[in-house]
Image (tube, rainbow, N blue to C red; front, top):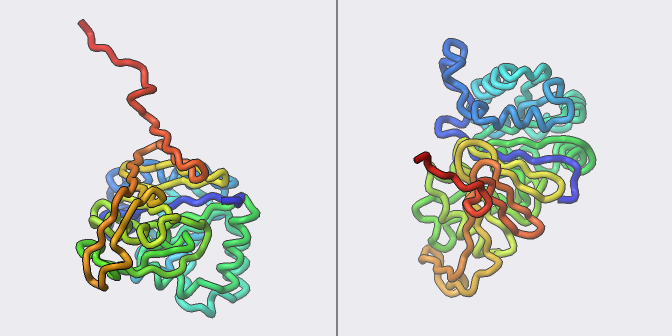
Length: 298
């Protein structure tokens, strides 16, 4: 990535996209969802000052920001993070306000919640706030973390619309520009639960240089400056590599007609697996070819 910062992108939760449930305060032990699998804990551990890092939760994408924001704060504080704030940025004008810019400049982690990724990019894109995030990510020990919409918006190409069941009909998937923290990938979220693999197939066949990343629920990727992507969380990450596509009818069929693809490569990652964006090699953590032999007792 040629950047000093780290990306932590998360597929979202099966519920409304937050880490906790309505009974969090009354029953915290049973409401760990994401961070019980280690995703939030990993964000803290990877951050510059660990539990003392300055974390800003940005709720721009959410339609219920004042419900979602406090849940993230509770989750981080439950994991001993000491310096967590919420930023309800709802208008482009707020992205130039001195207090807003000062908080972003001082942050070690920005955490973007779920919601509508087009809302997120249309409000933040091209603003001073966006410039500061890009500069910090490029030059500092800084983490951009995003779940659902916050994850989808991290790349330079972004899926913002397209039904799952019609995703392999030409023209059904809509793509625009994201926040451009990472290049040559395209990210889809809630991937397993909402059956979105067809959306990713169409996104990749249109430009096979782009690696498709499908994040399942309760699942994320830690992407570091050396181009390594580590799967974190309890679910699956699907990678769609189109570099070896042999043929397609994409340019020959009319809008709304099915797309055919010959030789599309798909990888499946689970916790601790690592994919190298530079070499396109996948290292499976518990590979059956490299694990010690297990023998049964007599």
